[in-house]
Length: 455
Image (tube, rainbow, N blue to C red; front, side):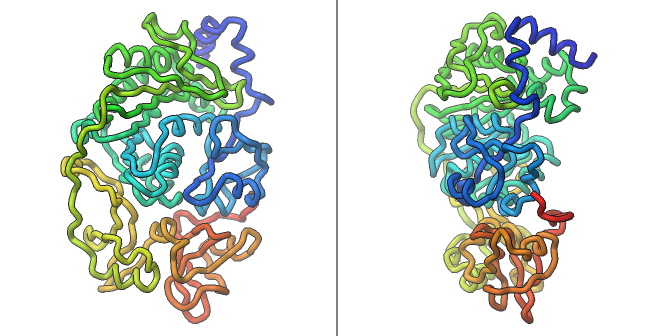
């Protein structure tokens, strides 16, 4: 029986509370969306998206999906990066970090990107977000999602936490560790998680989580905040992990989680180590989420002087001319060449020690030089499309939206000859080029809609 260990353990720990806490409302996996406030406000999204929504108790920018048949991934606003489909309780950890514009923030286990997109929204394009994923394939998924969400100030890494700690000790104001875990909160959403579950898996995940937390502690600046979260119920990965971390790191203090959702931590899950469980936070299936554990720590001390930043070099001479015509607000933004590819790096750059880290993307992939001409990339339009001087304005009910997302040419009504951004209700979908009365489609083939927009 695959879940025998899990069931026996939880029944022993919870007693008569087991059935009540592990049974979700309606018996179905919770579903939700989190609004990307780089694009719009939650109020506008609720008013204009036409999705069946209910307020989420876990995050002010999130909503519960009120109908099981709803398919948000087929919504045009999804393609425009207006929201991220996210299990409701997963939206809770990122806000606790209290990220403000201008901070340096690390998401150490970032794929597929839901929490990173939240952190980017809190930064509002200022400061630096370092989003890391150890698995290369998942790092590419992370890259695609942050591109869709229009993030302009992210450094996406494919690194081990230990190497990041060695390169950037004490560099970050805020660190999020949404640790790889045994996934006990995913059993309803992903049945394969139940099949693969075992006591040995829990132990391996607990050991890995401890290593990641130790690296995260090294990267955090004195006075900074560290949030640790999992989507499991296993004591070794949750209360026991938090207690063990404090025992190894006396320079950290456990902060009260706060919030009116969920429940405090459980004293019988601490492995005998001392910890104030009332400062921890759990979300059980019965409380509207599939399951999350969270803890927030503060590192002692005050902020130290910042490391030296990497200077801008190897500028792209073709960029100012292109930007002057199509993105005049970006004309003076530094553009760097890497081979024939052109990037707009984050304005808050990393110290020299970071140069050796495996980088998937730094900033915005603006375009490519082809035969001496600059050709814009999809990321330039998702990041800055609303600032483009030439735009094709679509609305949610316009049949050309579906045509564009399917990769077809469309009839321009507001854009003139040349490169243009394609917007839906003001939100960037991508780009195209108007020539001869036709808008030629430059929406990437791998992202194109298969079928229709029946959301």
